[in-house]
Every structure is written in structure tokens, then in C-alpha cells.
Image 1 (cartoon, rainbow, N blue to C red):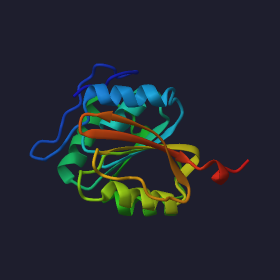
Image 2 (cartoon, rainbow, N blue to C red):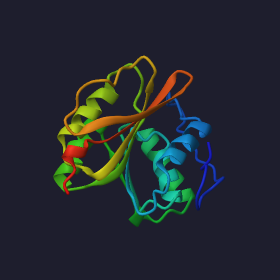
Image 3 (tube, rainbow, N blue to C red):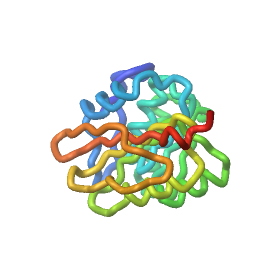
Image 4 (cartoon, helix red, strand yellow):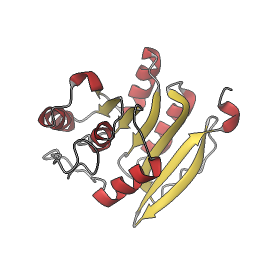
Length: 189
């Protein structure tokens, strides 16, 4: 896998060995970042980080910081190695070794705020739905935050949330990328 754009463009990212993963294809990652546009100065949360590809891509494209959340120790080690190999300054990222569901509440307790949240959970386990419910009930999203969810095409994310609304969807084979934004009435003037 490689970094698609920005400062670290074309540099390789290692994948965790001995871990069953479904890495996001380069063309899908590129499409996501084209839709997001300029992310310079944004704070990014990469839930279910795996190799750290979304957070690393974000830092490469000018994000101010990235928080990687992953509960598999092999994945955490791979993220650490990828960041070290790319020589990304440690002041630009944090790594949390814990479940995404728990991390959301921990980040709220720290007062953290994020402009972009990437979520690529294992399919067929309702993790995307449960994380969205947690994100919706916690105060970690900035005023104009975007949540990007990669999920299986038959997994339904069409349920009522208080602060988030589906903005757009893109299909890539069996994979769907859903973009959510905050409801307009929940944005302070």
C-alpha cells in the first residue's frame, strides 16, 4: 500500500502481518480525499486504524494532527513503524491502543475535537452503527465535522441520529463509503 498524495506521496505503508484485514484500495482512498478536498490544518480521528493509512494520508495532505485508534497490538506496532519510517514528528499524532467504542468516550473526557473522522470497522458486526451512535452522543466533533464510514453495501446505516446526517454515498463494488455531517440546526451560529 502507498500514500496517494501530499508530502509523503508514493511512499510505502506496511500492512500488519498475521492480521486478517481488508485494506481500502488506493483508488477508493484517493476518491475519498478528492471528495473531502483541502484538509490542511484539520484534526483527524482514524478509528479502526489497521495500518494507519487514513491518518497517514491525512498528515501527508496537511492535517494538523491525527489520532490513531486500534485495539490489535500487531496493528499498533505497524502504525508505529509506518510513522517512524516516514519520519512523521510525534507531535503530529497520538496512538490509542483500545477499542474504538471506548476511545470515543475517552477522547470526550480529554476534551478532544475532530474535524474529520475515518471509520473502517470489520464488516457484519454492527461496529459502524455502534460507533456512529457513540459519536452522535459524545462531544468530540468540531462544528463542521465530517465522518467518513467504509462499510459493506448491505450494512444499513440508515437510522436516526441526533447530530449527524448522511451527506453522500459512493459505491465501490461491495463497499460503500458514507459521508455524514452535522445537522444544520445543531451548528451554533
